[in-house]
Image (cartoon, rainbow, N blue to C red; front, side, top):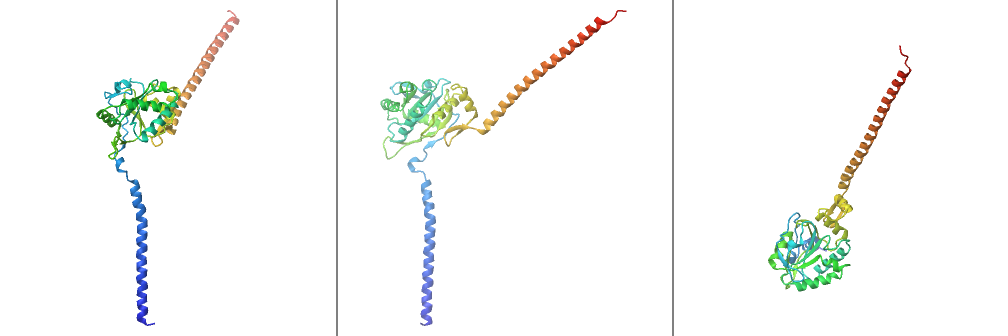
Length: 312
């Protein structure tokens, strides 16, 4: 084989190696970029959910002068559900919602059934329709539907009110609690919206948000005690709330180690103070008794000495 032919073969081999290396690098680059692109697409919010969510306006006060209609069609104002002390739970939904609202309100009704309190007694519940196209007739049917998930529907529904209203009132209320929703452009009378339960004091001040579809009955109770500033609930409820901390990720209350130690040390200081006071009182009494007995003994000794003394 000539040197020229060997040289040509060597060049071809080198070219093939260079091409293979380039292809491998391209494949490696594509393999790295593809997952990154997929992750970026996965992290992107769908267009119909952009600007949909909840801004937690804690300590804000809702406008209570807004007018709506209840499930019977009677005109009402929000102010009539706030008496200054009774806490209120508020949800915003619409009843032709294909899925989310139905799941939320069904789970909410089941959680209400787990409470030993009933709506209309210790608290009030407002479910306000975000769709101005739905009226009292649809609200009344929704109330009847969710009543089937309640253990005591007759008493609970007295305090669970389904309100409908105009767009201005709905939007004003939604803005006041930070509830961001919007109509779906390709679906008539349907909305993209979050799911939340807002707890309000008897004066309409926002005290807590739950953003879970399945709230625990015990957490509802604690949030109501918190919203009422202790006007509802027993001593145990208030003691737990004093030592509890709310976790917004799990939408639940749990005992705070710091608060437990803080209140525990305070309680221990009080107990020790009482014990020291009792000890001091007892010691003081013993000293007084001993002092009195000593004086009596001296007087008796003097009296005895005077009785045996010989007159001069």
